[in-house]
Length: 134
Image 1 (tube, rainbow, N blue to C red):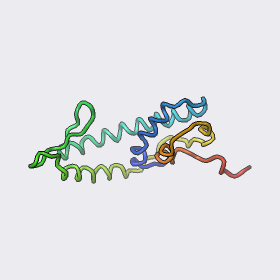
Image 2: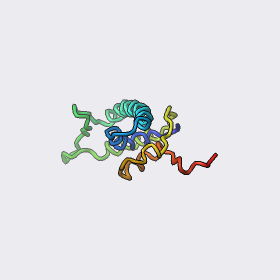
Image 3: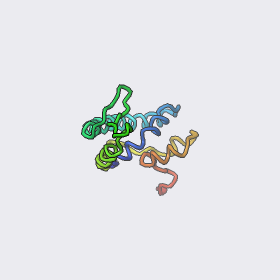
Image 4: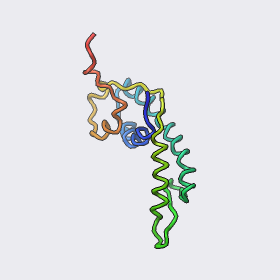
């Protein structure tokens, strides 16, 4: 499946929400395969972002938060953050070809899910009720 790094990055919270939900076996199996692939790609994106953060003077603390250099007024330097942001956006523009098979919506039809899950994971779902009858 072709995705952008941005789609992967933006799917983090929704993937974690779904990972904590109880699903029927088939849905859990299919989701776990996608989840594992996305988690690995998120690690890769984070590893690629680290040198960009450091390049612009940022430091990642023990909790994983970024501390930016201070300006003359003692506030985090917005220029450093903006320059990092531009380069990070370029990183997120990368197209990825991941071994993910879309999940049939009918597999989660009986689950109550927030719309945000479907918005952030729209690439994961295929509405099998819309497929042509054979």
